[in-house]
Length: 372
Ligand SMILES: NC(=O)c1ccc[n+]([C@@H]2O[C@H](COP(=O)([O-])OP(=O)(O)OC[C@H]3O[C@@H](n4cnc5c(N)ncnc54)[C@H](OP(=O)(O)O)[C@@H]3O)[C@@H](O)[C@H]2O)c1
Image (tube, rainbow, N blue to C red; front, side, top):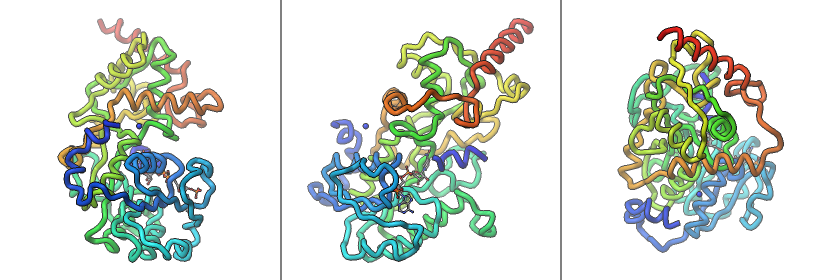
C-alpha cells in the first residue's frame, strides 16, 4: 500500500520559543553534546545536523561518503559502509559519544549491528522510525502505545513497517533506559525527494483550474523536515525517553479545504479549486494518494491523517507554520531542478497529467450543471 510505503521514501528565536518545556527539563543547559550521526546527508539527516549545529553541538558524520559528499565540508566525517556488517563500526569504537542519532536504516539488521557495536560508546540513542509501524489506520488518534504490525509473520513477508518495528526493538534491547524513538508521518519541506506536497505548490503557482480532492473535509497531516530535525536534537539534549509520534503541521486537525486555502493565499494564487466528490473521482478512476498526492480520505483510512501528536505537544513542541513548509518545498525544487516535472507519468509516480485533469474538470462541471 503506497500510503504506508510513502513514509519510507522517501528552518531562531523560534526554536527557543518553541521548546521551553524541553529546555527546562534539560539537566545541563550549557552542555554541548558530542553527537554522532549515522547517515546525515540526504533529506532528514541534514535537518537534524542543522538543528544540532544551531544549538552549538559537535557533530560527526558516519556514512560511505557517496550521498552528497560535499554537503558538510567542515564536519568530521568517519567513513563506513553499514552493509558490510558489524565490522563497519570498528572505526567508531575508539571514542565515546553523548548521543548517537541513527537516521535512515530500513533494514533492522543494520540497527541490530549498530546498537550492539556502539552499546558501550554512547549515553543515548535516537532512532528515526515511522508511523508505518502502526497496525490499523482505521483507528483515529493512533498514539505511541497503539497496536503495531505483527512481527510473527514469516520474515519473507516483512516489508518497511516490520523492519522499522524490529529496528525499534533492537534499540530498546541495547538502550532500555536511554533511547528516543521518533515516529514521523509524511515528512516534507526543504530537500524533500518526494514530490507530493510539491504537486500542490506547483499547481497553485501555475494552473488556473485545479481538481481538488473530495469535499475538503478530510484531514491532512505532514511534518516539516526541520521539525523532525529539532525534535531529534531536543530528544538528544533532554534524553527524552520512549517513543514520540512526529506528525503535524498543527495541533488541531488541518482539513483539506483549509490547507488549500492557506496555500492559495500564501502563493497569492488566482487558481479556482474544483472540489470533486469521492463518487466522481471513483467513477473516473482517480486514486487517492497517487493521483491526488497526500489525500487519504476518511472513507479509506480513517486514521492515517489523524495520528495523535499529543505527547509531542505536551512536551512543549510547536510546529513550523504551514506557509514556511510550503515555501521551503517550492524553493528547494526551484533552486535544484534539472528539468520540469511531468506529473501523472512514471517519472514522478504521482499527480494528474494536466490534460487528464482538465478533462476531469470539464466532466465535473458538466455533471454539476446536469444535476442542477
Ligand atoms: N520521507 C518520509 O516521509 C518519512 C516518513 C517517516 C519516516 N521516514 C524516515 O526518515 C528517514 C529518512 O532518512 P534519510 O534518507 O533522509 O536520511 P539521511 O541520513 O539524510 O540520508 C541517508 C544517509 O545514509 C547514508 N548511507 C546510505 N547507505 C549507507 C551504508 N550502507 N552505510 C553507511 N551509510 C549509508 C547516506 O550516505 P552515503 O550514501 O554516503 O553512505 C546518507 O548520509 C528514514 O529513516 C525514513 O524511514 C521518512
